[in-house]
Length: 63
Image (cartoon, rainbow, N blue to C red; front, side, top):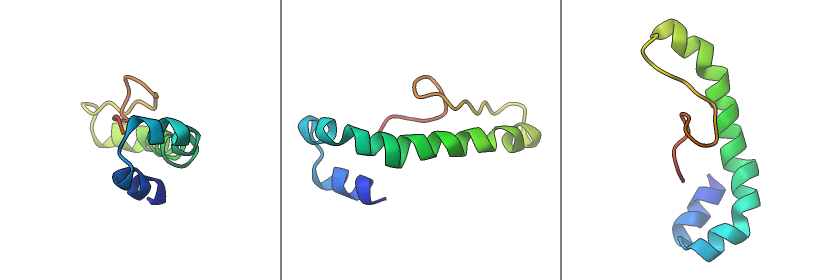
């Protein structure tokens, strides 16, 4: 959440590019791990819901 709060205050491309490694390690990778962990439980709940742990084209949306 700290990264996202800082992004809100510094919402520009240069700041994000300088901090992209932090985004990868503190936001994207944990989110992808959560999505992966939820694949089976969500599939048991509903086969209509696709849960795809991919950086692009999966269940994770843009920043």
